[in-house]
Image (cartoon, rainbow, N blue to C red; front, side, top):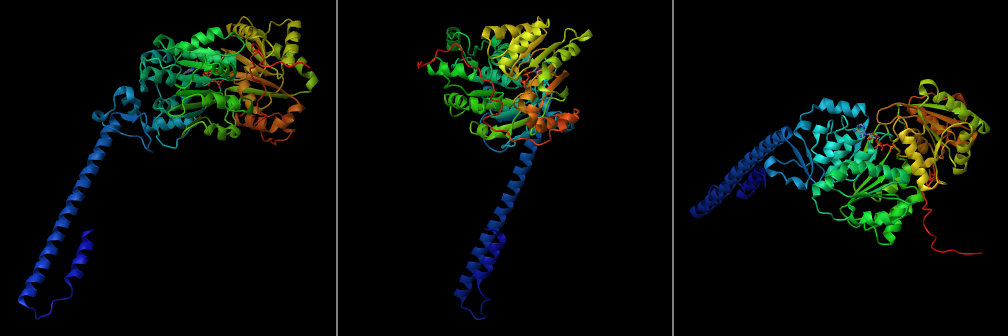
Length: 548
Ligand SMILES: Nc1ncnc2c1ncn2[C@@H]1O[C@H](COP(=O)(O)OP(=O)(O)OP(=O)(O)O)[C@@H](O)[C@H]1O
C-alpha cells in the first residue's frame, strides 16, 4: 500500500472533526487511535524510503556489474533458454567444460563501428528468436577453440563470414540454418564446432555423436576429408558411409566412430541391419539442406532423423540456396533455429565473382558450340585451365564423352552410369590436373571443391535455377574468380525468368535473346525441384525378384 493511500485511509478512519463536547474517555480513545495510525504511517514511510534506497543501490550495483562485464567476458551457459544473453561476473562463471560459448576479451574490445562495417560489407542477416546478438568473430584470435582444431583452421587468414557469424551460436548449442554463397567455407562452418564440441565434452567415446548427411558420395567423401583434418590429431574417430562400395570396411569403421558422414541410402541400410546406431547423435548436419529436403530424399531423411536423439539434439542445415518450398519442412526438424544469411540470400543469388555468359542457341548446335568453347577456354595461356562441363542426362554425358575423345580431348567423366571406382578415379584425375576436362551430370553440381576450376560450361541447362547456381559455383571458390558459360535453348524457356533474375542479381549482362522468352517465373514444384539425381546403390541386392 502506498503512503498516499494510507494517508487517505487514515483521514477517513479518523472520521469527522470531533464534536466540541466529548467525554475524557472518548478523547483518550480518539487520541490512542490517532497515535496508532500515525505510527503505522511513519513506519510505512520509513520502509518506502528504505525500499527506494535499496532499489537504487541494486540498480547502481547492476549497472556497475554490467559495465565491468562488458570490459571482460560475456558467458553464455549452453542451455540458456531465456531471451537475452546471460551476463555473469568472473566469480560466477560456470566451469569451462560446461560453457557453450565465451566471448573473448579481445572481441569485446572491437569497436562497434568495425562490427557494423562487417555486417554491412557482407550483407549479413541474423534471425534469432532468442535475440542473442552475438558479435561476429572477425579473427581466429577472437575464439578459443581446442588446440588441434585451432591449429588446423589457422592456416587460413581469418574466418569466412558464414564461419564468423555462425560459430558462436553453434558452440552454444543452437540449431542453425546457414545460407551462404558457393565456395564460402560452409564445411568448416559446421565442421569446426562439431569437432570442438566433441573435444570439449571429454575423451569418452559415446558412439556416433556427430552425423553429417550429404546428397552424393563424392561430397560425403570430401566432407569426411575435411573433418579428419580437424579430428584425427585429437583422436576423434570419423567414418564415411556411401553406396557403391562393399559394406564390411564401413561396418568395422562404424564400431569405433564418433563422427559419421553419410549418404542417405547406405546409412539407412546400415541402420536397418543394426550396424549403425544413431541414438546418441546430438549434432546433426544436413549439408546441401534444400536438396536433402526435396521429395526424392524426404522420406529417407525423416527416417534417419527419427533414429537420432530426439531431445537435446542440435540440428544444422547449410546450403547456398534456400527456396521457400523447403523451409516449412526444415522447421519440423529444428528447435528455435538461428538463421544466418550471408549476402542477400532470400532471393536466389549466385556468387558475384563469377562472370556469367548466357548464349541462346538451337538445340542441335550445342555440341558443335561446345567444341568452339573449349578452344576458347583452353587455348594459349589458358591451355591447361580446368574446365568442367555439365550435361543433364547420363546418356547425353556418355555420348558427349565419346565425341570429345573422338576430337582428341582427354576427358574424365562422372555420372550415375559409371561404377563408383570409375567416378572416384575421374574426380581424382581432374583434381590432380592429370585431366583438365571433366564432364559431369548434376551428381557433381553441389558441394564439390575442386581447386582451380576456371570455367564451367553448361551444355544443357539443369532442371532448376537453384541447380544452375550450384553448378556454376564449382568455379570462383574461396575468393577466386571464374567464368560460367551457359548454352540455353527454347526447351528451357520456362526457366528464363528465374535465370534473368539471377543474372540481374549478380550484375551480369542479360542477352536480348533470353529476354525474348519473357520474365515470367514459373512456381517451382516441390516434387520436381532438382530431383534429378539420387545415388542408387548398384551393389545392393533386390529384396524380392519377380519373374513374368
Ligand atoms: N576461413 C577460410 N578462409 C579461406 N578459405 C577457406 C576458409 N575456410 C574454408 N576455406 C576453403 O574454402 C573452400 C570452399 O569451402 P567449402 O567447400 O566448405 O565451401 P561451401 O561453402 O561448402 O561451398 P558449396 O556451397 O559449393 O558447397 C575450400 O577449399 C576450403 O578449404
